Length: 192
Image (tube, rainbow, N blue to C red; front, side, top):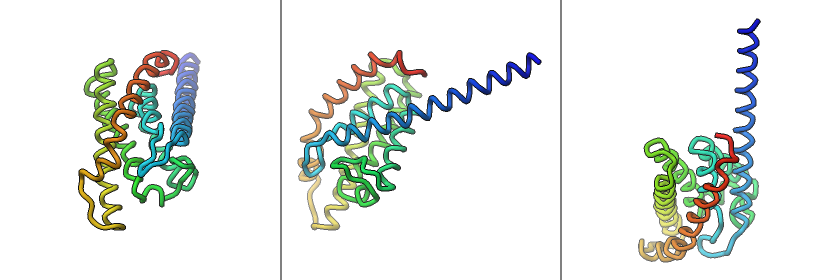
């Protein structure tokens, strides 16, 4: 009887843990959607999406945080208006700014990898956010250049960086600082 009871209790704990994890992933995917709606229109809109990505991975850890980013992207891909400007659908992902959205997944994966390699200390977390941001910039900029060139003709890398990266550097660094401070304060309240 005690073995069955222990197995039953262990199974119940595992189920509660899975439900909690799925709930947190869904909650942070919703947070990223809300962050995307905080938007200033531009060639690539100024949003709080990257902040949402950094907070999700910072608070949930690499696996669940990356899951939240993936769920967010999939919600948008099926047409829910979770992207900037209340947009969604494959057209948003294949448009000029879509590479930055897909780049969020690259950011989360890099942050997860760095978490595995270097842990979750303050320096490692800030470094992972910075490298994750660079991955997002690189993927998004390459994507933007391909889409823009296909639709409008050739454009230089420096021009695209001037449109899509340089204006975002300072705001994104502020988002990283805010996400780092917030995750430091809230981490103890999120079950690991």
